[in-house]
Length: 270
Image (cartoon, rainbow, N blue to C red; front, side):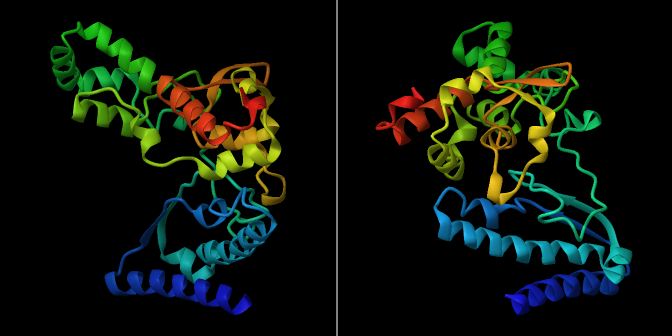
């Protein structure tokens, strides 16, 4: 395993330094779904968890390269995204100069379209949809909001649309559960099943903010995962207490249908 970690780290370092040397410029590193080697093995038993732990060690060595002296000088920008946020101790201990934007107020509307943006930049397409449905535009806007709006990522009270869903609806001129159709949350459902989690209580969740700092493979919190994967969102924040709900109709209906299919023999969930 140590040799594998070393090969991965050296290969990544070589790519960055070679690009910088060849172009004479600094390098931008964009990593999407950094956590996929971990979540692919969650909720599948002890052996799969051990695989996730081994992958965690490799990932830690891989990302640690970015703080290496030679590599750091060759970097211009690093941006890392993922479904879940694992702690700095478990993965990012060797890359401890990252800034976590997950729930930062200035970036609350960074990963979605606001209502103002929808009405400003997409009005022609909304008008086309209204005409095809034979409905008034204000009614179509309200319907789009119910289906695809509602995501809130911080204490700042701003909500955004799911970009994939709203773009798909306007492109196809139809209301469907587009985002959910791109992939089922298998690992999340497996964890809910392992914990015998009372899904009926999701819309009544009230949690302290510390729940968002607990991201370890050995003690994953279903509530934190539900939030990070987009199946619940912040409804309001009162004196440091976060209240959650499903973000919109697309997510609620699709998620509950999927759970019903997966847990038809587990009546506690319903």
